[in-house]
Image (cartoon, rainbow, N blue to C red; front, side, top):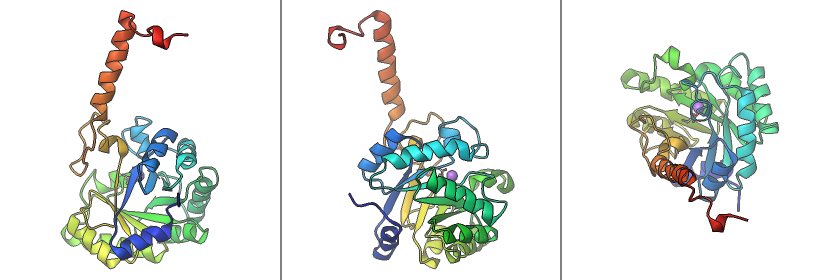
Length: 264
Ligand code: KIV
Ligand code: NA
């Protein structure tokens, strides 16, 4: 299999093809999603919620994310593996951003990093790009800034659309190979996609972006909490798993497992 590379994603935008990204935080899902044809795997800081049970994405650390990243990278034969720089690991200076990104490439085996940034962090993005590391700039709603943004809110409505376009343009100029748009109106996402030469990836950003991304536990219906409107559930893993586990529990209780065939 041929590895997905940044130039394939650039080419997708040029030819009007779409690409898919899904989060993954462990070896088995990475192997499954890669084999199923997902083009990009994201070791997102959403792992703070999906894996570690945090209520925000502020708490997860580089030390916690590194082994997840290494597990995903080791399983991905075709997919391009991107990892989030978590909150507190890059904001201080371009040097700090490079240091953290290098660790994820070196110890985590990532193929690129994603950085939540606006125009004011363009220097940080540029420094990471100069280190030879592909960067996705994450604009629009940026969960690491949820308290500054006043909660989970749609960005880029009305007048604010220009700020999203300006942020995306600044990160493209800094060398980002792709821009991810989270929770922006479809109209704003289209304006950003048209303004940029590089491909875009959307989550809750309509259909105009080059690619789409979802958190896998949301997309496959494993998450028991209410999911956002932009999430489409492609499976109901929660009911598959609870039914199966329920049967296991009752078969153990009533002694029908293990039977002869599962016994040495
Ligand atoms: O952490 C994450 O999973 C993300 C996606 C929702 C884009 O950043
Ligand atoms: Na994230």
